[in-house]
Figure 1 (spheres, rainbow, N blue to C red):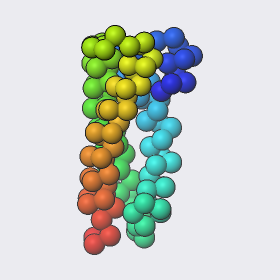
Figure 2 (cartoon, helix red, strand yellow; figure 1 turned 60 degrees about the horizontal axis):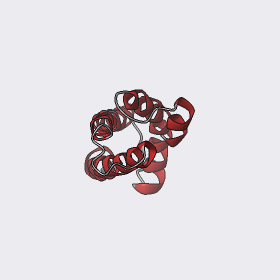
Figure 3 (cartoon, rainbow, N blue to C red; figure 1 turned 135 degrees about the horizontal axis):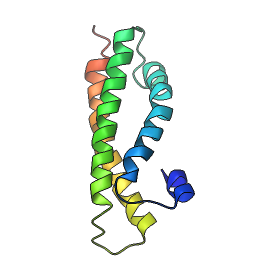
Figure 4 (cartoon, one colour; figure 1 turned 45 degrees about the horizontal axis):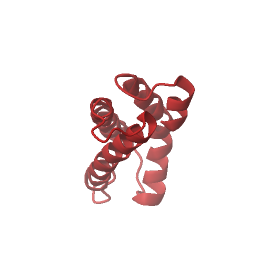
Length: 113
């Protein structure tokens, strides 16, 4: 996100939807394989698990983008735009990251299937 904010010169509002989409397209496929092999040590692979993973990550990315887009417009501490955008991004990513981990662990990569 910082790279995109720097290159575009924009860090607040709806532009974050586009930036999250770009980020999503980069990390989703790599994230699936790393989570499958390293984090959850899942032995099975199916198109269904990949679709589930992409759906979970996509939905959480959308939620994350909405939260970041809305929060960046409410700079309650009057910080620089980039500093506030980073705080908003970290907060939103932490919330959706924890939620994504739990969903992936207990649903997508559940080894009991």
